[in-house]
Image 1 (cartoon, rainbow over the protein chains, first blue to last red):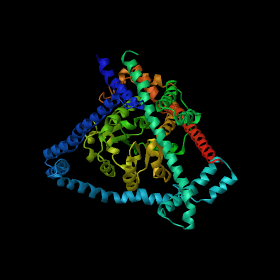
Image 2 (image 1 turned 135 degrees about the vertical axis):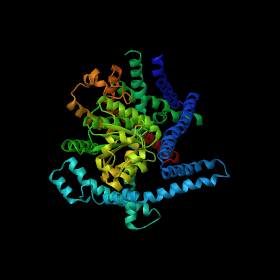
Image 3 (image 1 turned 90 degrees about the vertical axis):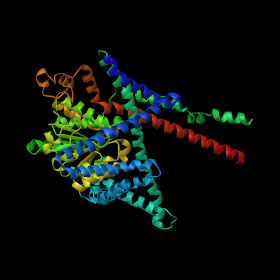
Length: 240
Length: 346
């Protein structure tokens, strides 16, 4: 009986995985059933988890504790937050849906202000700095690295030397390409279009390669579960 | 007559290789992935600078802890991935946890979304068990940190008030590890293992606002997005996808052999004796290994390496398919051009 309870759910997981893969042959009923089970379980799980893992421990328990400790201000603060959060549910009817704008306005307003400085620092100023200097503080357009390469012409030195200039030139070319995407006869804009496209294609190619690796990794993960973890579980449960 | 011509056209080899039915292509993919996997083939992979950077940073923390036993630094782990990215992120998490436990570095873990919690709990305790780590002293799982930004900002002063309790309901002020490891000053590094955009949040709030060093372990899909941050030095190294996981795994396996010995099986078998078992709270893990668990622990030690042999097969397969497709396309276009020329009587 214990063996059944251990093996039951992993076996269901294996069957559902295979059911999903049957789509590769063609769309079919087995796939549809697995897909619908997944959707239903996801929604049910999210609702239960929101109640048990957020509402109870993050709102109900602290409010109860604050009240028992006589810390009424904090308790009211939490209750007020909870009530504002509840206004999201008002969207279910047209009559009251306007109320949901309050929590949305508070959230959007808070995050818009809260994020400005860190986003600027992370995505603009530090990135701008990184197109001028490398993390060690040396300039990206560094003639000394080329000198080092010519003195000792190894593959590593070559990569080291061209890395910085490639970033600087690449950023400039792509910026020119996007800023002057309208019809423009300027000489610099005209000659930079093709190299900018090459740089973009290299970027997209790299991203595609990584995406392919990620998809195959997911497949390997499932195969690992079906052909390695599941048989191992059977073996150890049934006395391996 | 026209039908005959069309049939003849379809019979041409270059048309046929371009119209291989999809199920056969998938079957081929299944075989090239599964054969190396079942054959337990492992390939050695070269180690990139970005992965080395993460590893060396952890080693530096270890050295610092040896020299400053009273002012130890810990590592804060953002367990930022869920079930959909476990094949890539699990091997990263296993290797990182193994490295940290091997070096006896205190670990604080949290997860930003509900579905990640059970994964984090099982992975953390599973690896802690392999190194006899004590919950509350060597490591702690804080549970849900939602919304993560609030927790990241609070950690600049003290993370305890925003959590109230850990994942298991223990009061945060009763957990010894949190007496010291509760803010960025005492964390030598934050490692975010993520299949989402969460590493950018860590950069924005922990790194940009509080100068906390952040390393990232991420899926291959996200790697392209995070490269500029790694290149600029904002991320202290990056473990990208299964390849990165295999590199880190390789390094940690070498370290483990150096510290524990070549054969891990007897080490695991003898880890918990009757005498020391009572020291461990069974709520977190059962302090004993059966043979099945040992086999699984051994398999897990080269999970990414095994995956890389399948990756290799799959990549070669796709390259071959792309070449075949292009050859077919080239000859088809050539034949069409020839036909057009003949029709025009050139």
